[in-house]
Each structure stands twice: as C-alpha cells, then as structure tokens.
Image (cartoon, rainbow, N blue to C red; front, side):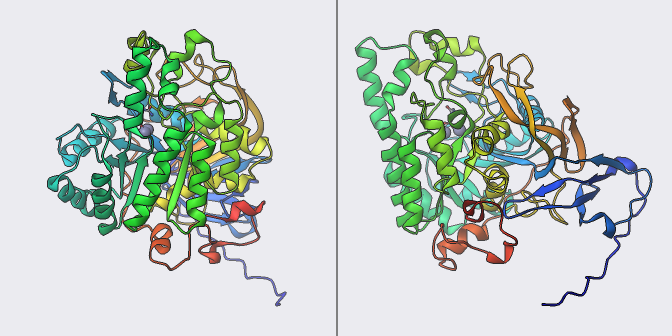
Amino acid sequence: MSTSPKPVKKVPIHLQSAANRVYIKNGEIVNHDKSFKADVYIEDGIIKFVGPPSEITIPGGVRTIDASGLLIIPGGIDPHTHMQLPFGGAVAVDDFYHGTKAAVAGGTTMIIDFVLPNKHESMIEAYDKWRSWADPKVCCDYGLHVGITWWSKSVSEELGILCKELGVNSFKTFMAYKGLYQLNDSDLLDVFERIRQLNGVAMVHAENGDIIAKNTQRLLSEGINGPEGHELSRPEEVEAEAVHRACVLAHQMKTPLFVSGLTSKSSAELVGRARRSGYCVFGETLASSIGRSMSGVAKGERIYYITSPPIRESAETPRQLMKSLAYDDLQLTGSDNCTFNKDQKAKGKGDFTKIPNGVNGVEDRMSLVWEKGVQAGLLDPCRFVAVTSTNAAKIFNIYPQKGRIAVGSDADIVIWNPNATRTISKDTHHQACDFNIFEGMTVHGVCEFVLVRGRICAERGQVRVAEGFGRFIPTPVRPPFVYDIIEGKVQSAVQEDHPEERQNGGGNSVAKKF
Ligand code: URP
Ligand code: ZN
Ligand code: ZN
C-alpha cells in the first residue's frame, strides 16, 4: 500500500454574493454509509467542496458557521405528507406554506405530497391543482406521488403522461376507504402491471377496507360510536392481511412496492419476511407510531389522535417499530402529516367514521426518530440518515441530488445538535394546527441550522423561510436502487447493493444495508 501523501487540490472560490456562499467548518458529516470529519463549502445552492480545511481557500465575505461538536446531515426527506388535503368534509390546516415551514423548522428540507384525485377526476387535472396549490407556497423542495383512486383506460393513459412528462414516478393505491379510494384486487393487479410497464414505483395504503366496513357497521349498531371504535374497526390483523396481500399482488406483477404508513409490529415483520424472500418491497413507518402509542391518552382527547392506520394501543409498539427500522425490515419514516384542528375533529363526535383522519408529524419526525432510535441505542447516526432521508431519495430516484452530503448534491443540510433537547408543544410548533400529539415530550436532537438549497432557513431557533422558495423536484422513472432488484442485477432487497458506495463502515451493521 502506498504511503505517499495525496497532492492537495485547492478549490478555487469565485467571488459572488456572500448570501450564496456558506462555509461550514469543524463538523462531523454523517451520510447513510459513513461518518467523517470534514468542512463543507456551498455556492449557489450546491455543495462544491467536502474535505479538510487544508484543501480549500476561503475568501472574505463568506458566511462561516462553526459546527464544532455538531453533526452535518442531509436534510430530511418526508415521503408522506398531505398538506391542505380536502378530506372527510374538511381541509387539512397545514397548507403548503405552514406545512413546509414546520418541516424546515424540524430539519426536513423536502416533502413528497400526495395528489389524491376524486373519483372520475382526471389524474392530470388533479396534479395541476396540487401544483397550483404548492408552487407559490412551498418553503422547501417538494415532489408528488399520485393516488390511483379509481381505474380506467383513461387513468392508465394518464399514468404514462405523469411518468414521461410530469415528473411523477410513484403511485399510491388504497386497499381501504371503501367507496372513496379503495380498489379491489383485480384493479390493483392492473394498476401494478401498468406501473411496472412504466418503470414506476407502486405504493399502497394497506388495510382491508371490506373488513373495516363490516366491523364499523357492527360497532355502530352496538352503540360504540366514540373514537375508540376507530381502532376496534381496524385491529392489527386487518392491516397485516392487507400488507401480505399487497406484497403478493405486487410480486406477481413483478412490480416494486412501497408499503406506506405501517403502524404495527406484525405488518413490519411481514414486510421484512417478504424482503428476505426476494420481493422488491420497502416499508415505511410513521412519526406518530414510533413517537407514541395510544396508551394513557385520556378518553376525551382520543378524537384528536385519529389517523389511519391507527396509532396502536400497545405501549410496546413504538420500540418494536424502531427495531424494525434498525433490522432493515422497514426502510423509511414519514409523517403522514394531515392536520385538522380540534373543531374540525369535533365533527366526528358521536360517530367515529366522521372524524377527519390525520395527525401532525412533519416538524417533529426528525427529533422523534433521533430520540426513539439513536438516543435509545437502537440506531446509529448513519442509519438515522438512511431512514429519515437517503432511502427516500434512492427509492424515488433523486439520489444523490438529495439525501447525501457530497460534492454536486443540493445543499439541503441540517447542522444537528445531538445533545441538545427541546420539549414539543402546540404553543411553540410552527404547524397551523391547534393540537400536537407529542405534547410535552422532551426529545434529543435539535437543528442548529437548516439550509434549503444553500439558503439558511433556520438558525438557532429562528425560522426564516421564504414562501415559494421551494421547487418541484421531478422524480424520474426506473430508480436503479429499486429496478436493479426487480431486474435481478442484485438478488434481493436485503442484499448489500452498490458496494462501491461503502467506505469505512458506518457504525452498526444495519446502517450498511438497504
Ligand atoms: O389518516 C390519514 N392518514 N389520512 C390521510 C389519508 C391517508 O390515509 O393517507
Ligand atoms: Zn394512507
Ligand atoms: Zn397518508
């Protein structure tokens, strides 16, 4: 092995407006595959340099941030939000401004929201509507998934346009919400087949909507109409059955599958088992379900926690789900942020089926994963980055533009203080909703700085976002990290793929897997 020193390459710095240039020194960079000490230089929203200070000359006028004792991590990517979603006769109160402002405050620099067309509405028209809502308001970058809420030849054709012309590679199907979004198995097979043809990624909300409908009828007829009826109508096995069925249906159509919003141990285990059998399937759990259980929630407050699939009663569930993330049974954390104020939730008093579904999470997701994962000793910081950012970037094919601290990547960067704590409260959060399901929890992991494409948008508690600064990020079809599995270039989802990316390890062994 040669011991001769590497020649030092000086990076020329061109004088530009100081606002466009940021130098972060003395920090520890954490990517999903390794962590190391290095400085970072940013110009015009792009990372231009990562390395030791001896290899760069910094001119005057550059904003310099001393990150001593802090971690420099890729900005979070939340793959599951519903900003200003019209749902159940109400509209979610976090619109694309408040929702993305809250995201940034918590260290998330990109969201992927869901276009959910009404039955018989054109997918393209719905997409245009979502773009017109989001583009003027977003404070951070965003992408879009599109929900396949009904199925026809015209929908099939529109999927082609969305993939080829409109920057959408992922489509969400629903096995629940009977009469609203639910598709039957025959339609699911057709949808998966079409997505495979287009080299896209299928997503699924996995709960058995027919069972839920039956149980709901029975519960209401027995006089059980309070919020407790919600989980009683959709216990864990109702989720697990649908998860298993979705994995089989997608596998039969050779379609990659993203199972969204898993809230129970049994479902997470089924995804892990499918992956070990070679199925190309990825599993997401949620800030709400790793952050808390329903245990101890007062009767009168339960209505504010209603979301689907439900936050489970068992106090063991959050830790079990976190272990599933550690073991690589699950790969991602989203928020499913879909917030309604107390008066909106109150519409479902006396009939749990009328409670608008959804809770907060976009702001607190990063801290909760840190607290329940890293602080609890279940994840190392590399795996934290994988499950909060990199894996989403890979699956939705925007890696390494997003999800990595590297030369050429977007400067979506969080300077993270792993030792600082904060206490979550509706009184201090940036979300528009008047309730926070994590109220009173103290969590480790605080953003000292958040940079969105090089712009300092949060600084030591001061959030200074710019409405409309965010951009729509197209997600191209055929993500290699997904299609290499489908096409047999790597054997299964649990095999260590792309070994050329691995250097120096990255903490515990699970951090290397994907
Ligand atoms: O309860 C939730 N999560 N509401 C939003 C719609 C969905 O299921 O994703
Ligand atoms: Zn859902
Ligand atoms: Zn959702």
